[in-house]
Length: 436
Image (cartoon, rainbow, N blue to C red; front, side, top):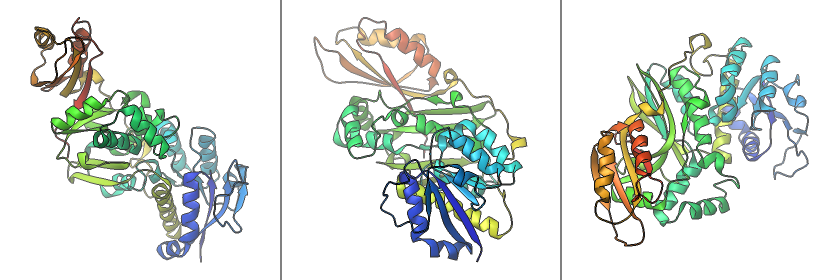
């Protein structure tokens, strides 16, 4: 029987999950590929650490070259994370005739435009299903199942940590800080959670999805990235009362005018499917011109879901090798010579509805001052909410606007902040009323 010889770089949480699947599901994988997928070697900084697995004759080493440059390895699985030495290792593996599987979203979002042409030039596979949304097969869907479609819009919940925090804030009525501490204690958030809660993780994933969907390589600097640090419990409460949920959404749109890319907290209708995605789960919605809107839902992170995606890529490579082919589908769907640079819209040009929150002194004439500022920017108000009275404390003033531009909103809030009656920095959250 033919054999696919695998070497792994990195033996952390995901690496352990991949090794466990390869050891326990070997017979199933043979039946599905007609090949034996054999793990030969693992490179790790801590080869002596006990992972609770019986590795048999699998070699552990702290030398990356024993995997990347070895003649007895067909596929390199990169699970180290970070930009270096992962980038150099993948480049060397491809140049030495090896296929590569990676879960490294940061590397692909930053250097995918260089790695993809290299893989194609070497006639090798570069697969990365595990880089976005864990066990959800969104990469394969975009590359293959929806290949006949012009993708007009893609949006979704791409970070389980943020979704867990926002879900718990609503269900428990707790503050952001309290829920974050709870998430860290339960292992849903890192000791330094900034990568997740500031939207960077989701932005890497959105860059990859946009590249496949639109045939372009957006720079991270072209993505508007806003995390959830400033979402307060009062925002959660008001959103619920008005019939919304707050979700951190990644949104990518394209039309004749260009591409819009953003990561930001968003109010979505409580009856929408995206509003029902709770806890650590992810979901991606894709709108194709022929297929319409389709939804993909599941566990977006963790040892087993991510390992499932990695091994799924190994299965694809095994099947291709057995059939005597490689590079059947370009890694980012479109061949490099057809990659285009679309204009990316500036945030000022975005148009939509907005939720505004101000903390104002409770005295006559305040509402008139605020609405006068909005009128100056030609912003029309859909609804105004205010509860509670206090002679000494600021009270919340909540407004929902009709469609306007983000430039007008920012100018209005900057002017409101200068009003004597406005006692805290005004906040706004985008509303997406038409999501599935």
